[in-house]
Image 1: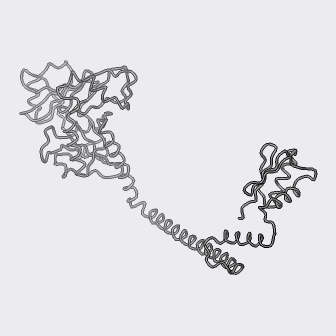
Image 2 (image 1 turned 180 degrees about the vertical axis):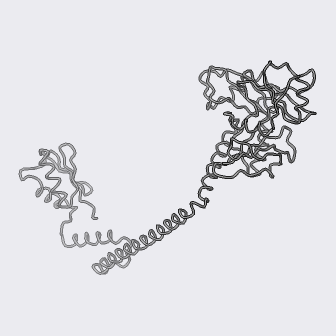
Image 3 (image 1 turned 90 degrees about the horizontal axis):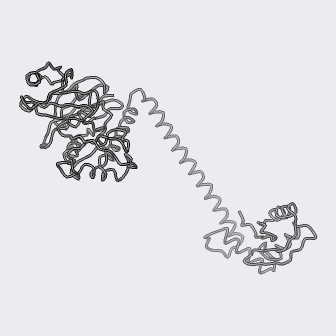
Length: 399
């Protein structure tokens, strides 16, 4: 799993800004590093490869606030709450800034808030996305916390001193007379280009640290600045990262046999399903032809077959009506079926017959006798149900 760590260019971003980059083979150790435009950045490879964007210290401001109780990290009004808390401390309009809360903030307790220019951050991230290197995480170059650290970075003409401790992150220009007094024993890390200047101004020895080493440390931060309006794009980047891992896994040489086996299995299933569907379609068509043939041969007057079962039922009903034979839906047939299924001494107090449905009221049957009558009626082709002291009968539809 390789990780590409890129430091976003300081505002204002030009037409082709350069990104400082480090390509770590595992996200923990050093690798190749340099600077390049977004289109020329190296592409991380391997399962779990990701891009981490680092926001420079000079592009961020840090503020400590206390969130009101009841304001959770995912609250929809959190952005408005932060704007109200920070309005008096900011030099720019709150709407023009991007905010990010420290990891695991607790309402009612002091929390750190990072702020930076929203348009600059979005432009820098969009340039990475346009170059097919979307950032999976966005981290600050330095963050408040202990132990305290001091860093000198930049070029001799624009060197800066960064102090990060529990009181925040402060950035000063490194020049004689303007640098603050540092606590005794505090180690100072400096880039090679400004190491001599740092020793001259601070009057103490410094430890050399490459910008790439600082990038690697920043990438291991628990912070993620992809919050609020950048949170959705952060989730999209995470999904793209997951899909990339899955794609690389599927393309791996050791899975070639499994891929071919899965392809053959899917093809066999498709062929089998098509063959089964064709067979079922042929069987259904044969049954329909048989029913149509029976209908037209039994009732030659039927010239057009639309719904064979329904048309056959109608023709049979017409024959019964013509010959005076009662059908199963007639009152006489239902009463005869009930008399055969119920005990001999059973007689209803009232009879209702509406829309081919017979309701027998006032039956005095025990539970066992009632169940036996319902079973007997079902055997004769009638659906029966009990409603209080009544029994309702209806001829079952032909299957």
